[in-house]
Length: 332
Ligand code: AHM
Ligand code: MG
Image 1 (spheres, helix red, strand yellow):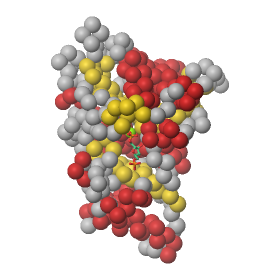
Image 2 (cartoon, protein in one colour):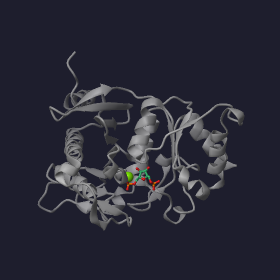
Image 3 (cartoon, protein in one colour):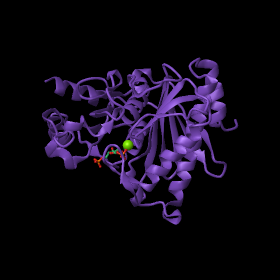
Image 4 (cartoon, rainbow, N blue to C red):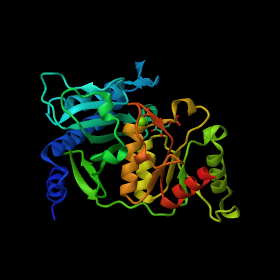
């Protein structure tokens, strides 16, 4: 059978998923198209003078890379004219981006991290783009408060990973499917349906250099993993840490595992390291759609009521058995 392009996939899904209206299809196609452009820019890298700092900080006080800014611009440009969005929020923009008055507006809101893991750009390690789509309660007087919906309200979520190949991973609430970019055509094709995360795992991902700053439950949990076969878990665990959330989550969606970015003494005042609306929520939904769990340790990420656009949270997601164990330890 011929390959299934993203365009064909979306039309076929539309027949079984009423949520997928024409505007949402256009929106998703534009996200994918922007990701093709971001992937091309990343591929040019040093040749196009695109590595290095942009010389300014974002709202989170983090130094922006040139490619952070470019990726953000590509996503905005892809969506501003399409008539399917009411507003956008991005890691790289302080405030909600409402469409210019002369542009047609639609019923959706888009939140994104244009270039996740951007500290890895200059060392040529995989980075990604994460996105989350919500319904806009209104088209015209839209404000940041409209974006503060729980993760359960997402209508689509996914990410692009720019690695040896560029892949695009999507959920519409009916499982998780994977597309791979044909670079010669500039188009994504379906390459895997229905990703599943095994309930059990022997692989975890955490930034171990923060160990001394973690809270007691995470200290105890990781100590058990490190004790391996001789400890209470009775099995050895392997560790991987790319430092790009997209790459670390992609690994666990592909071959299982657990990813943690807990609150620690350094990030407690901010609420954590990763952002709720455009990092934790979309990844939590993808992981749950693949049969895993996503928690802060105390509660389900998808149940959190966001209080601010750039709110941060603790993130523990992946294999069910491990996330449940982490939650048990937090309850203790
Ligand atoms: P970014 O969106 O600014 O790139 O930050 C998010 C990244 C995640 O991809 C990764 O899991 C984490 O920050 C790594 O942070 P650190 O190196 O501080 O542990
Ligand atoms: Mg990020």
